[in-house]
Length: 246
Length: 292
Image 1 (cartoon, rainbow over the protein chains, first blue to last red):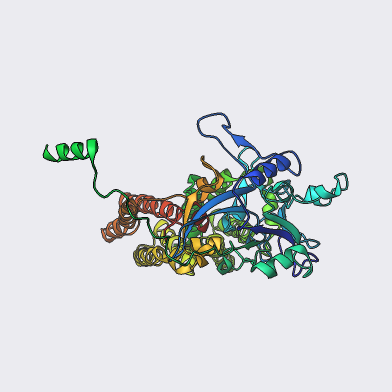
Image 2 (cartoon, rainbow over the protein chains, first blue to last red):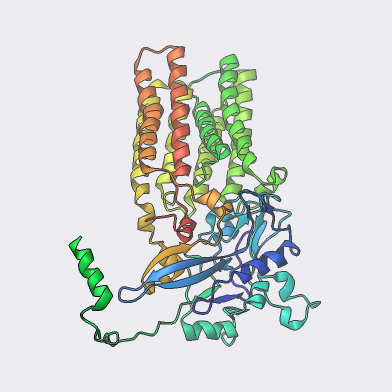
């Protein structure tokens, strides 16, 4: 049913720390690896070894350059996947009910056997979080690794999304935003976690932690040393004069 | 947005078909027998042909019936219902005209209303999308309805009404373009709001996540050259409005009417191509492809 639940019991999601992310793309690869062989259709590639390789990914890392008015440019790596929005437009536009938001944990999922591949949910998503799989003709999106987080066959430390488990920098955190005492709620409170495109009114669950302010060296650069040899002499002085005469 | 031929053909011809059905439902012109059969055949060919074309862009057309289930929230689902109801009512009404020589007036009015409602639901599929500021305006349904009515009047041979409605459609289209050109900038969505990094300083897309293309770039990031689009706008208005109106001013004969229809349909196809090709989806911001 594509009506959004009025309230979900839990609000599972991710915190992504833009200060810590080093842009290694490990989360992209672990996401593709896990999700191509677990929930739903595999994440296909088209022409993977040819001239125009492309494929379906649920998580991608952009890099942006930010230039403050009075400082040096900064490079910020920016991982982006489904934000599991509370007012998810991708759910309500779905004509078949394939796209839905779970009442128990707020995860936005696609029931692939009901998906007709019309693409309208991807049209309605401002974040580009949904990609239509070219081989399977159904919509793919982040499942928050629903087949890991509740999977009792996995060791407990692995019951988190693949991207979080693999991140070598610790830039990704998984938890329940409905619980003010959870790790993610505390991080958001401490670091000023922010929404992407708040003006779109989607109320994303996933939050981004802004980069911490950079250190600034306030004094002027160290004064330059005085040149020790003003006048050239010897061979170079002769060369200099000779060249000038030419 | 990627201007997919299936969607351009669908919206153009189903709009014309349901426009013609609206006029037939209103008894404009009052026809029975063979003439009615021919007019209804054209209307159904366009409306149903358009709907069938729309299934070509689906990943799984065999599951299309499931699209009738979510009418509570989904405009696409509502469009399915409205079109089926309109086509069923008009089929019954048409059967009375063609086979019994009977005009069931109220049934015709109901069919006309549902035909217009179908065009409205189609337009709302696009209008509802906040992600495409160019479409997210009340002018979008006005545009779809005015096109359908103008084309319907033209196909129904309502010369005076058609001239008036064609001119109205032209004005609405120009207004839609003028508003649309500033829509992304006015929406307030920028690379700064998309990344939340605007608080640090100017944001520039430095390195994309992948060197090749992907679904998002192919579907949402279609960039049309500005000079190109200005030319196509002029061509579409000429073909869609100016030529048909000029032809309709001439003494009526069927060849001239057919030319007017042909010109109009070509013009609407160009306008519809622009409707998609010029639409800027905000996801393009993440890829540094939009300059609001």
